[in-house]
Length: 375
Image 1 (tube, rainbow, N blue to C red):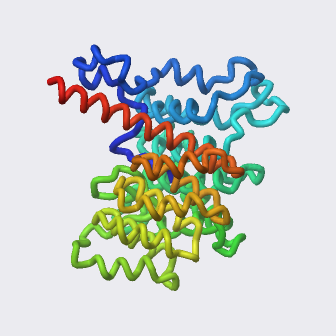
Image 2: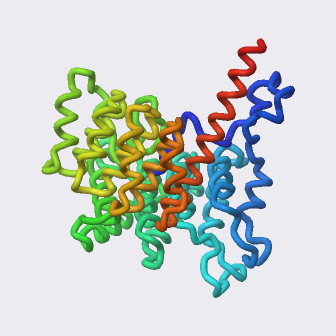
Image 3: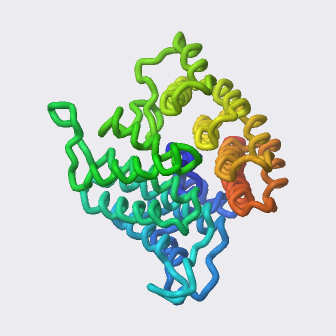
């Protein structure tokens, strides 16, 4: 899952559209949002795939602006599909995939799941589902991309079903039995272990327990692998804290506890769990994701330690880096600069993207502060 806060997506707001008074400070403003045409140009394969791919920060900006800039959700889905399937030498080319970055490919899968789930029509959902299933079943894809595809499939599946009167899920356009059996098979193949096996297990459990309801009735609009307890209050913090920290508790229940604690704003507990957990890289990466959503500086120390653990799974270090970019501040930036040349490409690229994100929000803050002083 991406740590980009759905309520505050970087690079997607034009400063002059936000406040025309900023025109006189245009040279100091954050970068303007990319247009749909510019996004298409960045992601296109018009050069027969021979030209080098744009740098990771430009690619990242393009796909996260795409959600707001696309004329429609199905067109956004089609653009992400094309990027994932783009080959060197054009369609069917033998030069391999054009966009090789695992960070980029896994973020495309994340967005396909989120946008596909939000599509009002079956065609858009089906297109997102088909592409995600293709990635999931492709054993040449990195496990992190396949993990994200599994999460995306669960999100799209949930959006494409409704609960019938007898309490069973009624498939609308998606073959729910195919989805369920595929995810269950992949979970069983790995014994429910490792990033892919655990993600498939979580997806199956989410379908069993949540059915069509996959969006939290809270301040977060993301389609999450599990739903927090909507009735939880501050008095429930100890119970859910114990549930999250207890490694003997079933993984899906720990996810429920984690999202419940996120909704209650329990950043310190979530940071403690990120530091303490020894059981699951998937859980730790999701902890980093929700800490990025909270954007609470209390998590900076734990996230910094997570980025710096060279023995940690790359997906956890990546998510911690993206969260630090969302939180910002000098300590975050120092850690991100330190690991921006890490030997693990996904970590190095995540640090570069996170620094770009932090610089974007800092430019906004400087501009707003100057306008307050002058106005």
